[in-house]
Amino acid sequence: MSTNIEQARDNMVENQIRTWEVLDPRVLEVLGRVPREDFVPERYRNMAFVDVELPLGHGEVMMKPVIEGRVLQALAIESGQRVLEIGTGSGFLTACLAELGADVLSLEIHADLAERAIGNLARAGISGAKVEICDALTKFETIEAFDCIVLTGAVFALPDRLRGWVKPGGRLFAISGESPAMQALLHTRVDAGHWQTESLFETDIPYLTHASPPRRFTL
Image (tube, rainbow, N blue to C red; front, side, top):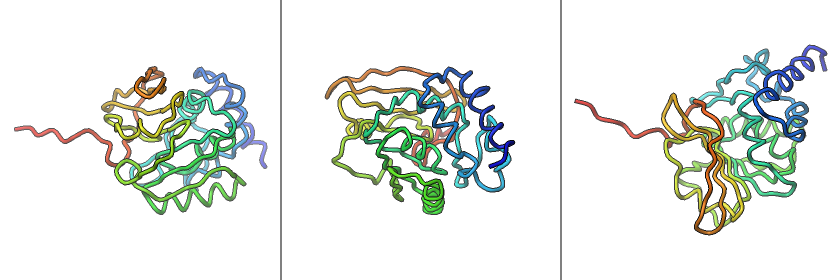
């Protein structure tokens, strides 16, 4: 492994992620250990540790490292918790969730991205993560309740059906609103009928499929 790659990884963690209020040592350790460069599309490999979104195809992106760090910190994963990820993308966040001890079910609507992510996870030796090809927002059905749900793309409005998949005490991370002023929100299910919502930061990322704002007709 080249010294340059390791130095770039350390700089990403110390100079980008840590300075954006990501202080959880477990999260910093995982982000400094999982080989992000191996999850980046080959043509963008030299930008693996840069503070930019990286295109994956189909309008999907790999989130900035700082956003990934804030997501992982907000979810506060505990070993053995069951996590539903909506939007596998490259599989990097999937890998980090699994390395934090989660049992991850990740849903990706695009078959080519899902297959690529499965390969990335296998090459990185990641266990504890399963990727399925599925339209999560409109077709996925489950009777299972999850400890955490994380959406890796934005939603104009959070679909109500997702709330029923969260255990009491569980957490749901979503970036909601209308571009360019979106809010990263952590929804915590207090009990069967009550939720608490915390606004974490502002950002702007692409919408998940079927989650963009409705068309507005103008004369």
